[in-house]
Each structure stands twice: as structure tokens, then as C-alpha cells.
Length: 185
Length: 352
Image 1 (cartoon, each protein chain N blue to C red):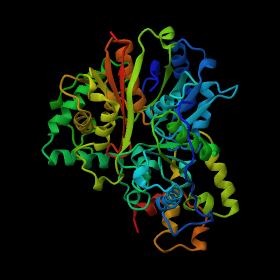
Image 2: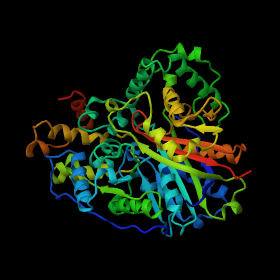
Image 3: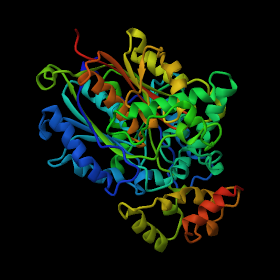
Image 4: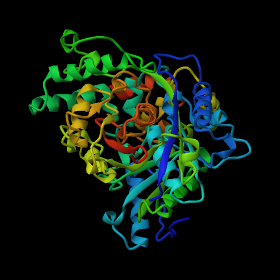
């Protein structure tokens, strides 16, 4: 290894069932600010950002580094997104450490995250969860409609309408979800 | 930095719709890239891939793609949910460590099984932008409109780019859209999303590509004409199109400066301009003069397998050195709406 690499600050959020007081970006910012504070660093000290989550459909956001770039102070910097299934938290930190060990970057912010409450697997009852797990894990489906559930759940939970009853409403056909989302508020 | 070269590249022909899975598409492509490198599978020290679950329509879709690498006994491997060009970047970083000399990079994307104009909406801010269903073609049209309104291009300029892409693609057996057409003919098309016509937009493509990277003294043993990675960098712009000047690409300019594009003349540039106006923006951002041959393959307007298109650009830039005897070429990849993130890779042949 060309360069040595040290962890100089860490931060994490409290893990709870639903964090409906923050957005996805807000959740990552919370952990990032704690890590930066721990390292006595600021956003401007960061050379590159590496994020990781798996799979995208847990939040219903495809390639979320694009949306999260602003909140993580990445504009004008490189941002990467790691996806190695269940190992992704560790793999994300490994990719970040490689950037330092290679000598390519000096200071890298790395964030692994899940906000499963914005997805049906975290917001439906157990029977539905089993049913959806089966559907989600069915390989090579010719259509991708079921992966649209993230926005639907956000729609049901959003706009101040959130309640346990709404959140546990049985899953509707995805077309209905797209209809709801497309018609706005 | 340790000298790293691309020593082989292979791609599947881009097609409008394939029956195969991504894994099935990848198997012959990966096999070809490894065979052309002269290495054995077991000689690969690091493997990195790029793909997207939302194209395959299943979470963890990339896991089955590893079947195509022969991942037994266990291999050192990583995956990015990004274009394969970013997987190539991660492999280049990994080879800098000095303990591993070879890397396999591959990516795959089957776009035909869903509706891209719905799926790519999910790349947008999920709270404020995504519910508008602002699809990638409409966002690209906003960028094209900004360019036209600023007086930096005319619709006929866009048509010239689209026509040249189709003409160039006639010589590319892997391209999907080709034809001996003129800009005037394309200008007679009705708009798809004004000011973009269908020919200003990329085809929906299924495809796969793979490359082998190598560092150190062994490069000369396996490859007569390697393409050395002289500079590679990627940078991202803010997500919201409303906070950017859409007539320029600040992130592409920054990546080009960091990759050392201007250090010597570029002969051929392969840029991942999926829409015709993007090529005009990128020419400016990358500092490519009129003497640079841009997208002789036809580029992303002729074949645009999402998640693969950027790796193919770098692969085509490699082929210009490896097969066509060029000395200094450029490969570019992009990600996100309106060219949000850009990667620039400068390649050079052996010193004369």
C-alpha cells in the first residue's frame, strides 16, 4: 500500500423505525456533520465523497448520489456510489479508504445509509412484507413497475397525512401509486 | 501515480431489445476481453462492475452478473451503481496500491424492459422533483432550450451533430442507429420534446462491455499497443437544474483540467453526449477544438446502453490507440440529469 489511511472521525444517527422528521438528505447530513465535528473538520476540508446503500429500491431513489450531492457538499468534487448488496456498509468504507491509500485523495467523507421507512418493506405488515419480499427477489422480471413503490409510500406518508393506519395500508397495484404521485398533492 | 494501461476491450453490439439477461450478455463479452488481454482468468487481481437495479427491475441484480466472471474460488470484487466508466476509475485507484497488477472492469444495462422516461425520473430529488415526473428527455430539452436562448447554438447545429453521429455509426458494427442522412433531412422531423427531435435523442439500447487494466512492467508483455491512462478524474454539479447554468458544464471542465486534457493535443474524443446539444456543451467544457475528431463511433446518439455508454466511450478511445494508431485520445462518461456528473479519461499510446 502506497499511503497509510486513518479514520479521523465517525458519526451516526440514532436508529429508529421511522425518521419522518428528516428527509433522506437530512438523515445523511446528520451523520456526516457528526463525523466532521468528531474530526474537527468542515465540509470544505473534504476532497471526495463515497456513499453506499443497497438496494436503491429501499428508498425508491435510483442512483441517489445524484440527489444527495448537494446535501453532502459534493458540488465540484467527485462523488461515488458503492453497491455490493448486504456488505455495502463495509464495502463503502473500503472504497473510500482505497482513495486515500492510493494517494489519489487526502480526505474522504464516506456515508452508508438506509431509510427503509420510505419503502414498503418497512411500512407494511408482516404478511404483506413476506409477499413483497417474494416479489422483490423474483429474478429478471420483464417489467420494473414494482420498483416504483418508494414514491407511493412517500406519497401516502407525506404531506402531514402520516398515520400508522395509512402507513400500514395494504400495498396497492403500482399503477395506482404512479397515478397518485403523478397527480401531485 | 503508478502507470496503468488499458490492454483490452470488448463490447456486445447495442440492440433495441435482447432476449438475454445481463449475465448472458456479459459472459461472451468478459471472456473476449480476458482472451484479448492474453491473461488467464485467475490472473485478474481485482474485478469491478457497474450496473443499475432499476434497469434489471430487481434489487441486487448485479450479484447474478458475477456468474459471468467465474467468481470461484472467491475473487476480490466491487460494484458501483454507476456507469462502467466509474467502475474503471475504481479499478484504476485500486491498481495504484501496488499489490495488484491487473483488473477486470465490466458493465451491463438492459434498458428495453422498462420505460426509461419513467424509470430515470427516480434519479431526481424524491420529494420535490420526482413527483413532477420530469423525465430525462424533458430535462435535456430544457438544457437544449437554454443553449438556444443564449444564442450559443441553433437547431440546425443540433441536427448537424445528430446527422454526423448517424453517418459515423455506419462504420461501427456495434452501433444501433446509423444512416447516410443530412441535417436538413433531420430538421424536417416533428419535435419529440421541443426543441429536441427524435434524432437529437439517444435510442433505447441494451448492451454490455468489458475492459482489462494492467499496471507495471508486464503491460509490454501482453499488449503491443496499450492505452496508458495519463489522467482520469470525475466531478459532480449540484443536482437541481435550476441552480446550475445549463449552457455550460462546470463539472466537465473541472474534470478535464484535473485529467490534464490541455497538456497536449487530443486527436480523438469519445464523449457520452446522449443528446445532440450535449456534444456542443461538452466540446466547450472539455476544450476540444475543431481539429479534434469527436465521436467517430457515432457516440451515444447511435447506441446508448445506460450504465455502459461511458465505458464504451473509453473503450472506443482505447481502440483508436490500439487499432488505429492514434497517440492521444479522450473518453468521457456522464451521469444524472443534464450532465450532472462527468468523468474524463485521457489515454496515450506508447512514447514514439
